[in-house]
Structures are given as C-alpha cells and as structure tokens.
Image (cartoon, rainbow, N blue to C red; front, side):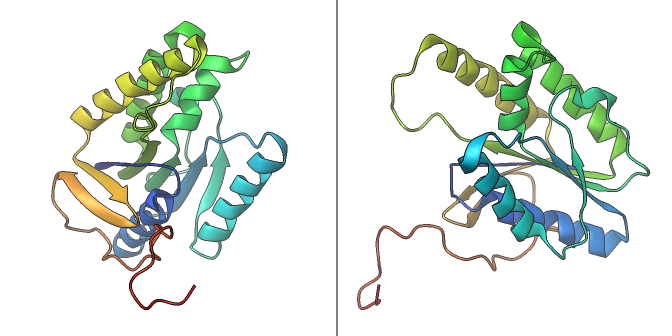
Length: 198
C-alpha cells in the first residue's frame, strides 16, 4: 500500500503521516521505519529536525537518514515506512554535489519505486509549495517544476492521496480504511472562534 500525503507548511501533514504509519505498524506487527531526508542546515534547520524528533519520540520508529540516492537504501526487513519528505529529497538531489542534478525527477521517482518494493506499506510526505503566488528566481522555479512533476507522478501511482489542511485530512484518492481518526491539534491559529481566549 502506497499513501501520498501532501500539505502546506504547518498543515499537520507530518503528524498525520506519523499517526498513519504507527497505526499500520501496530495493526500489522511490522517494524516501523522513518526515512529522514532533511539535512539540518543552520539553526532553523536544526529546530525543524528537533521538532520532528519530538513528534515521533516514543512511537517506535527506526530512523534512517538518507539525503540522496534513495534507490540504494536497504532495510533490515519489510515493514511500514514513512518517507519524510519528498520535497527535501528533491532539493537534495537537485542541489547537492552527490545529487542527480538535471535528473532529479527521474532519480526521486526511481528511489520511491524501489522503496515501495522494500516496504509492506509506504507513506510519503510531500509539500504543496505552489499556492503562495510569489515570483521566484529561475533556480527556485526549476525546483518547483521538478517537485510538481514528482508529485503528479507519485499521486498517479499512489493507492491513496490525502491532503492535510489545518490538521484535517481530505481524501483525494483511495479509501479511508486503516487510517487514523482525526485526533490532531488544529494548525490554523490565525482566526480564533468567537469567545475563545487568546
């Protein structure tokens, strides 16, 4: 089973993906792997990595850091795999010295396809970076084109596609079976309900 989970920054997609993977692992008795693709650059990067570590603490994940060349990754045994995230993997392949450069789309797709063969269940997280309406430099626009092509291809191949908005999963493709109920904190804090205290 391949589940693609997409959402904007701060949407709750990572928490939802982790809950999904944990549920699948507990129900199946299979090992639980977390493939971390984000390289922590600078203080902000370290904060984001630490936040993700706190989110998955005590959930039983075996963490494997993999920044490029996903296709060569081996797992001790088949299990439930959470890949976090496609956006970072694409950036690494595009910009890192050992990355795929102009072959980023093909390399990421091949890596995910190979990972699917090694997993019983794969949940992959990716970002929606196309809604802000900003104008970027040519390099960033190329990255957006690469990620857009990767997201489209993976969505077509996935058994389920779920968009997470403000912590709420919207089921775009596939059913809801074996997915966690919504027990997440709300992620939209800019508008308060009437009578709610700050």
